[in-house]
Structures are given as C-alpha cells and as structure tokens.
Length: 374
Image (spheres, rainbow, N blue to C red):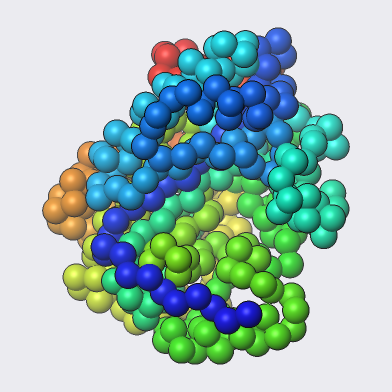
C-alpha cells in the first residue's frame, strides 16, 4: 500500500482534538456512557465533531479548521457547553486530564467499532490501558517537504509541550511521581516514539514503503509517533499533550504551536538533524517525570538548563510571531503559569493534598472543565 499524496493546506491553520473522560456523579469513577452522549450530541448542530474513542467511557471532540487560538476557543466553547448539558441529562460529568486518577483498566470495555475491536485483538490488555486522554494539535503546512521540516523542528519542543500540558499524576489511585504518567502507556506500543529524521517527502515515502512491505504497517494511523504527518489533511499532528483541565488551556497550547510554526517558517532558525535526537528521549522523560522542574538539554549545544527557563526564552523568541497571529494572550496564559511552576498536574496534587480523596479531586476537575469556579 503506497502512501497517499500530501494535500495542500493553508499554512499555520490549526485543528484541535481533545479526548475526554465521562464519569458518574456518584463516586466520579469512569462511566460507560459514550453511546448515550453521542446520541444526545447529535441533536446539537455544531462546528467540529464528537466521536467515540477506544473504550466506552471516553469521547473525542474536535474543531474544524481554525486560523487562530481564539477561533479554536470559539469552536471548543459551544461543544463544551453542549457536552455539559448532555452530561447533566444523563447525571454524569465530563472531565479533562490525561488519566482518570483511580479507574481500574480491567473494568473498561472496548467501544463497539471495527477498528477498536481489531486493535483490541492485536494489543490485548494494552487497549484497555489506553484509556488515557490526550490533546492532539494539527498545524497546516504548505507542502510535504515543509511538513517534514516543521515536524522535526517541533520535535525540539516536545518537552515544552509535555510540561505545559501535563495533567496525569495519578494512575489507579496512586501518585506516580510523574507529571505526565499518560505517556508511559503510549511507550508500550511498538510503533510509538519518533518519526525517522528525513526531510524530503520522497525519502519518507521510501521509508513508508519499506514499513508496509514488512506487513507491520498499513496506514499512517498505525504509527503512534509523538508527531506524525497527516497527508490527507496537509498537516502534522502533535500528540504528546495531556488533555488539559480547561478548554482555555487547550486553545492556548494550540496558540503556542502556531507561534512556533510561524517562527520556523519566517526565520528558518535551524535545520534539524539526526543528532538532535541523541537527547530526545532524555528530555522527554525529564518533562514527563518532573514537569516544570525538568532539566532540558539543548540538542544544538548540549547545555543543560531548567526547562522552565527554556520555555520562557522560547516564548521571548516567538513573541512577535504570536502577536501577528493573535496568540499573545495564549502565550501570556502559559507563560504566567510556567513562571510560577504551575501546570494542571500541580493543581491536581494540590487538590488531593487538601481533600485526601481522589473522587473529590475529580469532582472539582469536572467543575473546572465546565467553567464553574471550584
């Protein structure tokens, strides 16, 4: 099977997907209400989409094509509001966060859709352990070679994305000591990790042909890479974000991606190379484990510095491009919290320290998602 051709898209346009938790309002454990939610959501004519995910206590919402982070927020807001209304009718709640803090994976049921059933047959218990919740950000690229260049430039900023979005400190009732434990579940899949460092689409097509020849891969969907090309959309898709606790943060993260992309395209600040990836897994681990307190190793110089400091420095570099694309507010939101060492993982831990009950933490997170002060 050959790789589909790369469709043109408007450069720097955005699309955002959010995987969300459905919980009951009795003990705030996950609840198998995806089908009921989808049925109710059909009555709401909205831009974007709402679809099932791997297990039946999850749903995924997505925007249509957006040109700014404020447009992302403008599309996510009515979807969020319709979700909340539908959940209220079912006496359940919708929650952000990269993991549910105390659900037991063996209690999950695979959603009845052919692809999910096939994945369950292939991956066994990993499929149920994939009841984790991420944000995916698509960014438009003018052509296939530009997409690969954008992908490998973005790879240097994977730790920044992880630390800023981290919201999965708890797994099966325990504090994992990770800010993003969610990504540990993704590592288990054989085709996770990062894309091969090629900068020409013809080279990527050769790689894809070799992989399909082995019979291991049938389409781009079979790669669970941190960032992957999406030729049918004319985008690259960044997949390392935990789902934030609020749609405002989700939109701000999209604004950060767009501002970086604008900087790359306007200034061509560096050419990616294979050696960039020498420190890739170390930086990724640091961000997952320590969040804002991580150490970042600069791939170009080998210098070690606090990741938080590199985030601030990066935001200074791209501030002008953020202003041009209406993302200054997005960067301000992320920057002020990064400066304070705050992210959603810290918020969840602070709530748990106060409440000593993860069900109450989930209840407060559900209020936070719907925009109600806790």
